[in-house]
Image (cartoon, rainbow, N blue to C red):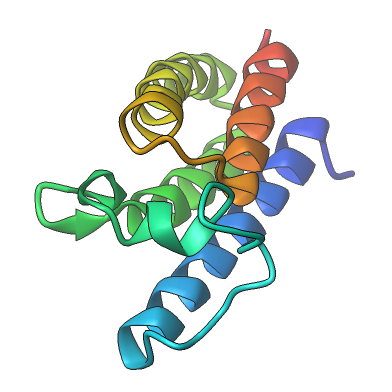
Length: 127
């Protein structure tokens, strides 16, 4: 039976995969316009390709894909305490990235906020 945590991890994995697709398309053609790009202040691609879109030289979507795959694996193996600790860490990172997106970049990223919501629900479900 699929748990709530696994469903949330799959949603997070899909969102991270979509982020990967957007970054790939934007890198190939700056003219590409993602579905979540509404205007200059509501643009996922703008946030993903900003200096806050990478950490230690690696694009954030790779961290997201790895994170959600790890959550899926750990939950299926019954390591719920580790999932809880990972969810707490994801909230801390989500707060930082939300600050960077909304305050520093002055941009609302729909996909980013969906990921933050998934992370909050993941924390709630892992209790």
